Each structure stands twice: as structure tokens, then as C-alpha cells.
Length: 135
Image (cartoon, rainbow, N blue to C red; front, side):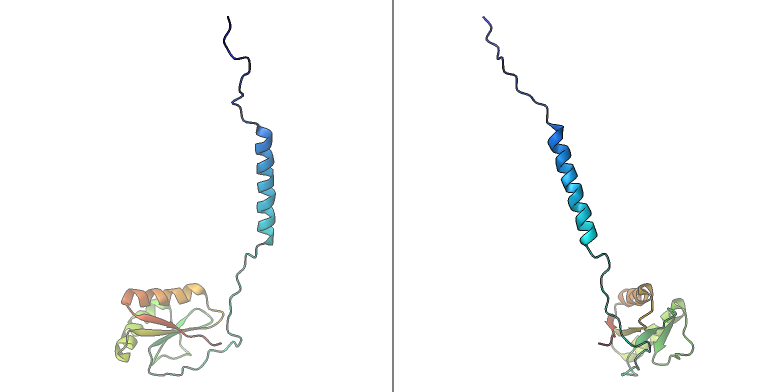
């Protein structure tokens, strides 16, 4: 007397449907990658000249086109300096201004790293950075 089952259940998964699924996902991601826009539009000022400083008493750092820095008040646009050379000058300018606020102005061709250096200096010293831009 044989009581065993004659129908065996297959426990193997079919690989044909898995390869179809992988192929469809591959096509989907290729199409999505081609349709996406890898460059984000950045709105920069139209003119190439730096706008005049409207508040001469405010402590501000101007970043030139060559990624050099000028600290106002008291700075000379004809003699910009390296970042390491302006830190003490910026401390004095903010202390003389009486507010923990530093205005940051930059040329449209200045590197983002130059702006981030000034933002990091403001954060380390506990100043409120104010980014100046022109619409």
C-alpha cells in the first residue's frame, strides 16, 4: 500500500520571469537617466561689475573674480588678499560694527568654495552671514 503523493510540488523558482523583470527595470532606468536634467539652473547676476557697497559702515567681505577677498570698511578693491590674510581683519570689522552680522558679496565668476570659506568663518565665529545679491 503506497500512501505517498504522486504529485511533487516544484520548489524551484523560474528564472525566465526574473530575467524579464531585470531587463524591464534596466530599460526603465536607462530612459529615466536620459530624460533627467543633470544640471541645475543657477541664477547669477547679469552684470560683470560688483555693485557698490550701499552701507559703508556694515562689516562685509567682497569676493573678487579671482577668488581674492576684500574686507570693508577699510578695504581696498585694488589690493585684494588671500583668505588667510583677511580673518583678523574680518574679526575687527564685525567687532567695530557692533552687530554679529557679516555681509558677503561676490562676483558672479567667483568659485563657490571662496564663498563657503567666508560662510564657514562666519559660522565658527557665531556671526550671522548675509548673502548680498542683486535681482
